Structure formats: structure tokens, C-alpha cells
Length: 337
Ligand code: ACO
Image (tube, rainbow, N blue to C red):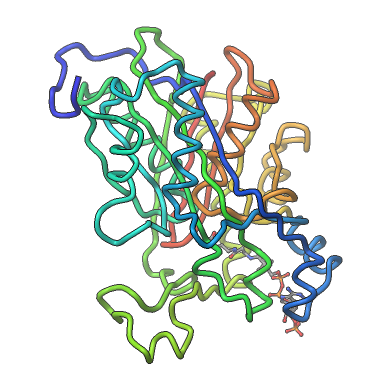
């Protein structure tokens, strides 16, 4: 079924039936940063929870990472590429501005009957993507949707700025979402928010139509992310807390009924503050930030895949996915496995 061919039959639910992830081979440790900026392992570990991150090779673009994650997700789901109706790629580091990275993926994967588009919601991208997949499925627009979230943040990271460069890593995650006749399962609830008045808090100043690339913009280092992290900190804690609260309220859940919170791996202190205030013990909060750092939109997707593969989420288990990022955007999803 193609994305255009809407079905009359409305499914009961949209389920995540497969996930995958991929990170580049190259590891960059906290110790490595001490050789390029004035920093140390203790500061980075204490302030962020990060120990290392993966960095793409110069010839690896976002689609090269995403394709591996997508293949693993399709394999996990037992779905043939030709059976995918829609490919959604959430990224802020698209291979090109034109065409969409999702189109490169659609072709390279062999999703011959699928529509494809990119989505820009920064670190909230994967949950925005899952929400679009769910909506397309529940309205009969698509039966099987491939959502991938992938970033090569190293290509927009200023490695002369110690306050931002230590935060980011590269990686990709993917999920196959499919229509199901089983009620009360799968992606039960999604919630999306934005506040563009905070757009300059995390900004890539040049390279778009506002300030096209020029010698001047390159000389001024305007093709890198500019982030006011300190200002974002408290807001991020509050919004992540509110997202958990809303998902639990709307799905009528108690802490005991939630198996796992899978947060955007932004900063251990932000995550611990938000989940702790909501009464979640550490064992119910999935963390892999020490291995990969902040991989933008890919972070929740990678964490979700790792949690499933480690057996942390079994049949019937409830997970809350929550994220916060540039835009500003924030988003949550409640998923029964
Ligand atoms: N090594 C050593 N010292 C550093 C480093 C470093 N890498 N970076 C900053 N410092 C210094 C600062 O210069 C400052 O020194 P000063 O007091 O002499 O001015 C001091 O450490 C404290 O800096 P703060 O910015 O106040 O540190 P904070 O505790 O807020 O931690 C951090 C910074 C980790 C960025 C935190 O604010 C944070 O996680 N913020 C929100 C997360 C965020 O915005 N992430 C990016 C999201 S973008 C996206 O997701 C796509």
C-alpha cells in the first residue's frame, strides 16, 4: 500500500514492531578533549554525565548512519523495505538541504512504494516522528512507517568552544511502526510542543536563507551551533517533568505501572532532576549518555533500541519517551510494548 492509498479500515493501534541503531566506530573520550580545549574529565563527567561519544568519519553523512539503523530496525521487525509506506527522517544535519535525507534513504533501502520527508525538531525529532507515524497509521494513510532519527552533529560543532563541543556525538536510531488490530497497545499517546521565542537559545546562525553561506559567515564561524546552555537548564528540567506528568495523566498511569522512562540524553543532572521529582527511581530511567553524549534527535531512538535489545522492555511493558531541544521543542510519547 502506498502512502497515498488511504485505507477505509482504521486500525486499532500503531505499534513499534522493530527498532535499530548505529553509531560510528570512532570514539572520542573526555581525555581526548583535554588535548584540544581547556577542559578536564572531572568537569565533563560531573556537569554532564558524559564519558565518551562517537564521531563520524569525514566521508560519513547522516544517511550513511541512518541506513544502518533502518536496516536493523526493518530486520528486527521482519518487514521488507518494499512494504514501507512512509519514510520519515528527523535530523538537523541533513546530507543536503535538497533533497530530503529521507529520499536518499527511501532509494537506498528500496522502499519503492513509500513517500518520504525530513522533519526538523532537533532533539525532540524522534518523538515528533513517532507522532506523525502514529497519526498516518490511525487515519489510514499508511500501514507501515519507518521513522529514523540521525545526526552527524560533529559537522556543526565548534571544536574551539569548550562549553559546547564536549556535549555532542554522532549516531542514528530507527523504529518501524505498524498498524495493529490489537487495542490499548503500541503508541498510546503523543504530545508535541514548541516555543519559537526561544529559538536563539540553540541556533545555527548561517547556511540558511537568513544568512546564506559566504566567506564572511565561514570566517565568523557561523556554521556551528551556538548554544546558551545555562539558560536552557532549568527550562529543560521543568518541561521534561511536565511531559512525564502529562503522559501519565492522559494514560492513567502510576509510577509503578511505568517500566521505563527513556529520556533524551541531554545531561544526567537534567534527567535526574526531572525524573526524580516525578518519583521515578534510577532503575526506571534509561541512561546511556556516558557512551554516546548528546546525539540530538537520535538520542531517544538509540536509547529505545538499546532498552529493547537489553530486555529492559518486555511484552506489555510501558515506556515513556521524553525529549527537549532546539526550537525550542519538547515532546513525549507513551508506548506499550
Ligand atoms: N570544561 C571546563 N569548564 C567549562 C567547560 C568545559 N568543557 N565548559 C564551560 N566551563 C566553565 C564555564 O566557562 C563556567 O566558568 P565560569 O564560572 O568561570 O564562567 C563554568 O564552567 C560553569 O559553566 P556553566 O555553563 O554554568 O555550567 P553548567 O553547570 O550550566 O553546565 C551545560 C553547562 C553542561 C551546558 C549545562 O548548562 C547544560 O547541560 N545545559 C542544557 C543542555 C543543553 O542546552 N544542551 C544542548 C542542547 S542542544 C540540543 O540538544 C540539539
